[in-house]
Image (cartoon, rainbow over all chains, first blue to last red; front, side, top):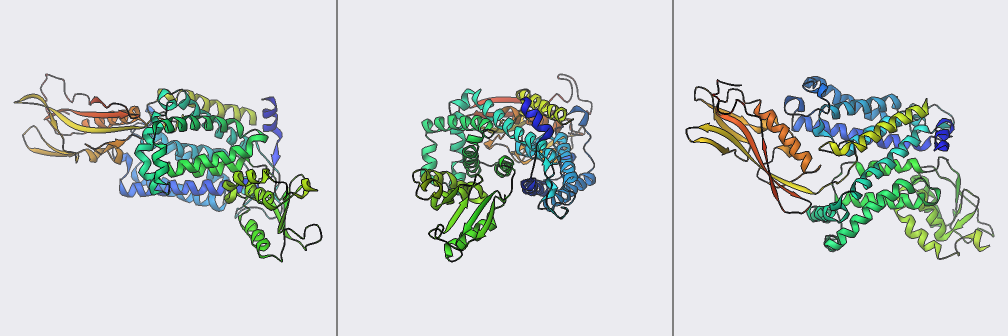
Amino acid sequence: MRDFVARLRTETGDPYVLGLVRACIGAFLFWHALAAARELSAVGYFGDGFYVPFLDALAGRAPARGVFVGIVALRMLLAAMIVVGLAARPALLGSALLGLYVLLLDRLQFHHNRYSLLVFAFLLSFTRCDQSLSLAAAPGPRIESPLWAVRLMQVQVSLMYLASGGSKLLDRDWREGLVLGDRLLRFGEQAVARGVPASLVHVLQEPQMSSALAKLAISTELFLCVALWLRKSRVFALWWGVMFHLTIQVTSSVEIFSWLMLALYALFVTHDVRARKLFYNPRRVKGVALGWTVRLLDWFLRFDVRAWTPDEVQGGHTIVVVRRDGSLATGVRALAMIARTVPLFFPLWAPLALVASFTRKGDLHTAA
Amino acid sequence: MRPWFAALFLGVQGVLIVTAARRPDHAFGFQMFSESTVIRIRPFREVDDAFGVRLVPIDPSGNWVSKDAQGNALSFAWGDRVKRPELRIFDQWIFAGYGADAQLDRFRGALSDMASHLEGDTDTRRLVLEVDVKKNGGEPFVVRLESPYRWPPGGANHGAP
């Protein structure tokens, strides 16, 4: 704990990845503001009818319709500014406060994912998230920036898992699988419509299976709240979390919650840039394709991607990855390394790593 | 300064999470998918006329006709006050996303709000909702929600409200 407090004071890192998280959160804020505008047009202004403020002090104090229209428009503008990085930090703060104001005015509009998004937008405004992927970023290299607010965001992620998993653990219906079983029965068709095989859905709807799944879901949330912090378990925790949220996404309606959590996982990557190298053979089509694919999709800038002229050591390989510690990986281990660091390929990491663990053939370092 | 800010922020989050169970919708508590509950609402008006005190069903569309002090017909619609789609569906099973307590609390509020906006209606003493609840796949049970009386029971309505 003392170490954590000390790190809050002094720790710094490359803020590149924060620009990415900022753009995602801006897009989610825009999506929500757009939904509010659509609702205004389709359902009408909530202040003209029945609404429930969180605080008695706000009862009967909804702004005039015109003012609320202005608030929605401002939220859209601020969200767009966040995405492109124009005055992004004040825009994040303004967006969070305006969103919280609306939620406090009318708890009928409350959703966990909306509140979570606003909390993270608030915390992100205290980071140097405007130094990358930003129209307003100063030219030249990025400056190492304090990470205290990033650590707070990580703690918030863990708190959410703890609260969610803990409340389920304390609820007998949840522990026994009754809640999950009933949800699977009710939303099974929706899952099938989203591509989940009907036979799998039917199996999951069996009481024994939903009971086992409930225990797995509770364990997963409690595991994630701790394992994301431990260096040895972090990559597996991130992969397991990605699978967990993608499963939720196809089986439930959670607005942007799954994508928000996946974007926040970027906060748990080590804050360094181009600390690994990827060499590819420019004389092989596969090598060129892999090199360019990684260049295009390496959103965290983990790799320094270069073509090399094959020599007697590297001549037999299409790609060679130089890890952070200087060790080399080729073949399936190199692919596992790419999957581990390139977000779109990350779901493939665990199966590739499992295959790689059975062979040392592709690893120059250990084979030597 | 940073540790103090962090302590304050985390303290507030902790209090909100620990106290979430006290709020019907468990707001700010991150209790995702806390229930799997469906409810079905049947709306009524309670009137006191020549036939005595009785419940008159309201059409599932949420529209009804009442009377003013002169006996003229007055039209009302639930949707005039209650805009949220999930609070306007009657006589159908609907999923209560945030659980039975949250949905019942919201309907209780909507009922009182609607009853307090029946301007000129001297026929409707109060509004009543009968709610069928099925929680986590269990047996259904009925909850009755009542708005406050619009005038004292047994008393005459002198054109209230």
